[in-house]
Length: 422
Image (cartoon, rainbow, N blue to C red; front, side, top):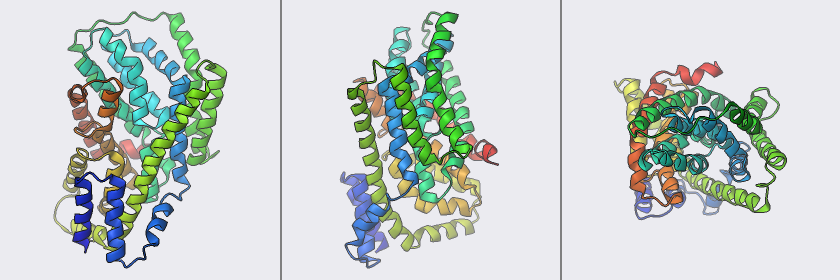
């Protein structure tokens, strides 16, 4: 029956059934035929999975990020970075990475980061002579920093699944986010220097001062959100709601032209759609993981792997390889929901810190977003600019290798993940 449940799940997945329904079908099959559950328990489990206080942070952080994009505050922040380093040799690609990192700290969403930064930076880079391939590859890859730098949606989901404190995960993601940003900046400058592009005119001190003053309200948002969490003023979920209120206030005060009903509706619709996708996958995953735990399969795998003679670092390499393979045909969120019930007990059984594993997992989710043929950031950028996805894939390859190297460093140097929470 266990094998049949997996076969039902895989067949549904292979014939193109949506991932949430594939997970739900597999879980329902086990629930009915293996666990003997009544049919009415299936929808109950589905909805119970969403009944979590911490999960309320997801729609709030998504809405805050979309408001930053559509209401205008994000672009003032991007401009100050461009004014500071855009005139240097390789400065514009470096500025693209830095702006992606900062925007990721505001939105928590990779897709929002890719579109917002790409709209501003890609036309400037191509106008100066950087290849379209490299320009799109930089933004698609660096846009994934929104998954690591807090407030990260992936950290919220990971915390809700394994019972860790999301505030600790946010704190643990800061140094890895900075480290990966540096790796990507170096890669962008090296790759960008091969294009022999011109540099943009150096901004005057008055221009830099003006853009910095205009960006101060936007740059304060991460300080308020994270500072509020770690000072104990509010919980991570409450901080997400505060971030929405803060963006509305600064947009009303400093971006009256973009503070329109139409932009507000766009922000709400985009946030609702993304939230609905995440939550419906969560419901299907709950059915699947509950039945999986009943079969004792994760526990047996954990017991078997901890008893064999392989070194823990070899097992971790195999887990990284598994994530990489899954990333070629699945989106990050389904990967998280499918693997965590099995891999989390294995990894903690090997003695790895759960927070450290969360950071490494998040880095792997970043890679999966630019892994062809299903990388979400690749398709978001190609569809927005109406460019062949192959161009974006080729441009992102050097940065994907850089992300793989950075992930291996994070795996074998846990200090990056644990230093701020020890």
